[in-house]
Length: 225
Length: 299
Image (cartoon, rainbow over all chains, first blue to last red; front, top):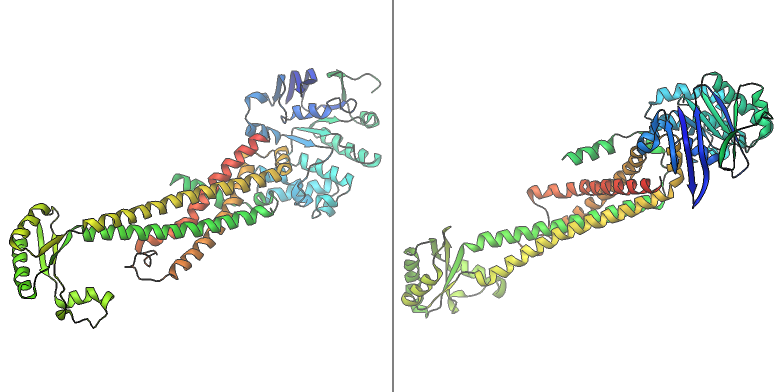
């Protein structure tokens, strides 16, 4: 699905990530942890083709991103749901329209959108907020809307970058349950977080592999996690 | 033709949801509408001027190129005889299709604009005029002048070339200037739409980032902006073209005059209809190019 082979990434003359290899197999659950500034977001962006590695290879669904044009990367991204900490919505569209955006840009008709959308909004508990604008949502609602948007195309992989960064413990547990549920449906999940409590809580429900970025390299985290 | 079809398909294949992904813009809407309207107005006006100049050039060229005038300046008692002699010379000159002396009424009509309708032409020492129409091959002007000077001493041949040539040249240049103006207008339109599109795309960098995040292709993103700008330019240009046509129709309608014949005739009416479409095509191309550049830069 997503494979990184000896990937390095430099920015502004300094090497941010070095010699990273990872293969996200179908149905697996990964956590990516590390201190702030370690490069978790950069690593996630490499995983969905938003950045090109300085060296090494990133393969999305068996195709090297270097060999793909931007449109091909965009099409591959429809199979990868992405949740950002800051959510990134279009503020002039309603919550429902934002959630349906991946369907809209992939040219799916309105009736197909409608059926998927209603089901998904109920799943994340946002049916009553369908017509609200994104700035009117609370932090937790925004994260749930972002998760709904990430999975509306029924992607093979969901990459969530600090999805619980702006929400309270209760809400982060709710989001985690949704992600675990997705994993049980066969989706590959990777969550970047510095919240170790969240990782410990998740491991009670799902068999997760925990990776850590330290000294610019990717390591398997210790048994304490 | 193919590019027109591509543009029409891209613009008319509207998808309400797709159009909504670009936020309702601010000043770029008004800028594009106003620029397109102003440019269409100027283009239609330049076209009207150019077409009128073209008509004048061809009329002067066609009508006067094959006609000449012989002026008989002789004492009154010899005028008729010399006129008849000149006509005999003309009848035997190769390349002359017809020759006839203007009647007193026709001469009076020629003088009327300067002396008024009551001019007693018979009392004035006005030279007799003979209108000469030549064949397509034309006549030998030098030979005819020599024969006239020998047989009709009071005859002076005027083949109009001295004053016709600069007028035809001027009209042709005026027409050329009209077309150059239209090209400049098209270039200015492209520049303005490009600037407006750049501004809109730059202001919507966040929108583009989100669209890419959810899997939008560059074609999709560019299409949303291109469709919006093309339709705005088409709307503005249509308004400008209609206003220009109204302004042209309000001009004095004497089509024989040099300055009063500005307007459209016959098939020329196709042009004001085409102007908004051409401006929309320019906007389509300019926005496509701007969108590609900006999207390339944002990658």
